[in-house]
Image (tube, rainbow, N blue to C red; front, side, top):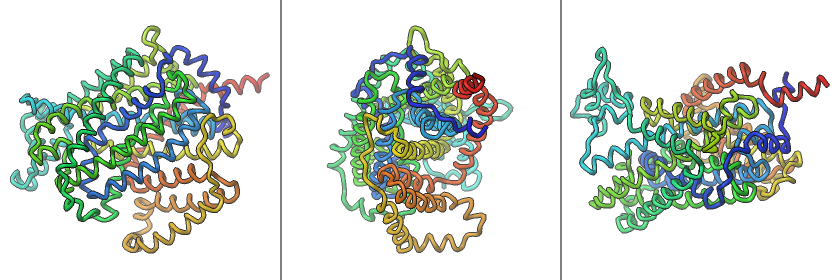
Length: 567
């Protein structure tokens, strides 16, 4: 059984399966389209919403965190690019894991990607709702509060009202309390839900359903608009920057900066999603690697610039708001710009939602084509040339939770699955190099021999940790074994993995860049809360139940090998 669980698919077999099972998809995307889709996915709720919270916690120094996370993403993007040039099919990291690590790991990654894209879209949909409501209010249209937010916000506000009184509540909590007080009730239970988030999800799902050509056109238009407004924010905001707002640069220390890891990393999520459109590319082996790198570099520059502008225009303490870009211009009295941003942000976030809704059905389609999910998920619409059933299911899976759940619940959870996928893709490149598969790659991660460098980096890392982490070491000493296991286990794993990679790099001359990608992503993972990991593990357990209940028995690769054994 163990051999069957980790049985790998050859590149030739994957390409053959894709040609046979995915021939119904329309091949129309070029490198410009892919870059546009990448920017559409990356520049969305992250820059228009979560960037405010990250700046509030870390101050202007969050701009450095964007640089650090960008490096992690660049190293990972190079690994994705190499796989995409070698295995140009729609499965993204799921397919790559099938080649490098075998079926069980492929399932785990595929299941993690389902979670990543689903919860990412939930965050995007909720953020879209917030900006949409703000935009309507700018035009004098006021929707009832109970139909514009998750019930959790209203319930928390009601509890805070009971504890501290309305005079001690912040403005945002008072709005949520209004929703609780004015909501219709059934058996004295307030009916509160985020209707705009659900509606936009269904509308975007319909657009994705009717065709990739229509989705491409819509994405290209929306990307041009959002890039224009971001450049306007940067160039216009420079005139309102006060250098004294950058002092202190890191008011809450490195702890405050790193607390924004999830939000900052969420802002970069998306470049990997374009790999799911490989079978709709004109020349995926040439265009996908270029598009991934181009869109990531463009977005990294924009993020760093806009973070410095925002924290320069107003004090970082003022940025704990749902719409930071519009807020800073209101703050400096430039109300017209705030109104333009409010309208544009709705368009921008819609484009991000569009790309993620494109990505998830294609993961399900590929897993179904391999026999690991029900055959219905691989259905291609005869007219629209899209994975129709998978697209409909994606819309339902995203829309319903978006009606009821708080955004901050999903942000960290999104990062868990993404980090996991990124690490395995970087590991996969090391396997490709070691096994000789890289010879078939039309794009390769630039090779830098890590034989000595990984180990030297480990020694330097230990020295720096001992020198500058005295407070953290004291915290460790004060913890019991249970607390260390619960809150610091990933930190221990990080250092152990670094030691193992140092040994393996010395032995096998591993490429430095994929190793660096593994370590940076693993370090960022260690900064996430334990509660997110518990939810993620429960999700994986549920996935393994489905795999062993259906996927293992119906795997095309397993059944093919069984037939050959009979012969």
